[in-house]
Every structure is written in structure tokens, then in C-alpha cells.
Image 1 (cartoon, rainbow, N blue to C red):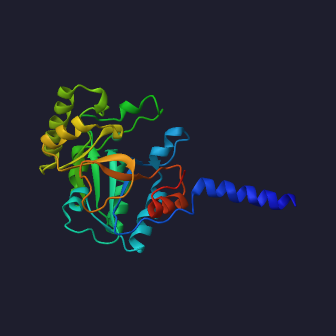
Image 2: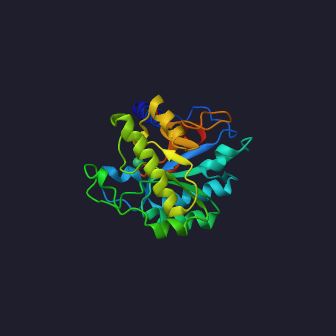
Image 3: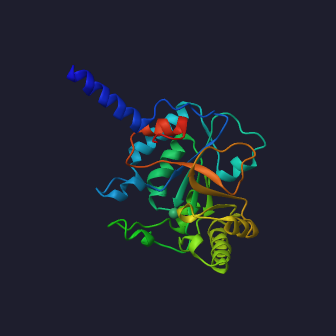
Length: 257
Ligand SMILES: [Zn+2]
């Protein structure tokens, strides 16, 4: 009798954790995935922002085997009609490991990506309260080498919470970082990601005025034809979640309550 209760408890626990009963979202809706660092774990809470290279390869290779086609974020926004199984791989902040660890995997499997740079910063020092390991960000040279498959967007000059900045500061950050990214890539910087996913109507308006063509947020969801291109939802991939979590999120968008 007791083992029936134990099995039941495990089943309920598993179900609450993974929400397996949730319906899959249509694959006519694009998935925009959000990554940060692709690196080995250091044994701290911040590891959730570090997807291990082997896990990243598993995810990208699964996408390839299952017939998903990748687009950069601006390519996705320019599509007249979304083909079935469209995916965007995005990286926030511009960690140097995006070049050393992610780029070879993306190349190997024929995937494109979008990286949002903080072009004025050499390290992710804004995370110093959250990690003991400060990381180096992409160099100009590394950025140029990835230009064949990567679109570079902006993520401000100083990774500040735009909601807490004055509108003058917001405008300045948007314009200067766009210019700084363009100075490195020699290409138009069309894409923007709001740091910490923080934005409001004024910030959206200033982002459009600065000349950007699209912007991503942190709220979870899919991208459908006709959606607002300045509030593109994403599915965050965390380093502390297993492949089953990735699979569930990818299909159903949510894997937890
Ligand atoms: Zn960021």
C-alpha cells in the first residue's frame, strides 16, 4: 500500500515540476531562444546563465536533426510568412565564450545566431554581485570572425536597467551603442535587447527613434507573424536545466507552473 502512495507522490512531483500535460505550441510559431554564456560550470548559482558546451551541442544538434531552420533575428522579422520550424538562437551580453565555445558548434550544424553586445565593456563586471568569476567579453577581432553566421545587435553601452534611467540617458545609450556596434561590424545594427528585459512604452519609442528595427525581451513566448517587433518574446535556456527541460520548453514554451 505504502509503495502506491510513494509512486503517486513521485508522479505528482514529476508532473508539477515538468508540466508534461501542457499542449505543444504550433511549430508555425517561431522559437527565439535566449542564451548567455556557453561555458563549463563553476559550482555557483550563476551557473544557470552558463550552458555547458556539451549541452549546447546536444540542443543545436537536436534542432538540426528535427529540421529546424535558423534565422538571425532581423531575418526572422523580415520574413513575409513564417515557415514551419523557424528558430532564432540569441545570446545576450557578448561573452567571449560565444566565440570559443558556441561558434564552432553553430558552424558545425549550420546554424545562424544573433549576439547582443555591450560594446563599451570588456568584462561582465555588472554581474560581480552574482558571480565570483568575471568573464571576458568578445573582442572586435572575434566579432568580425563570426560575421559569416552571426548578426550583432546592441544591449546598451553599460548594461543598465533602462527603466531606472532618465529618458535622456536611455536615448544616449541606444544611439551610442548602435554606433559602437556598427563601428566594429561595419554593418547596420538593427537589433536591440533590453538589459534585464526591462522596458516601457517610452523606451520602446526611443528604441524605434534610434533607428533599430527590432528588439527582444525576456518574457517567455513564441514569435508569430504580425507580432510586435519591439517586444519579441524568447525562451530562456538555462545551464542548470537538463535536456528534458529544454525539450519541454521548446515544445510547450513553459516547463514549470
Ligand atoms: Zn544582459
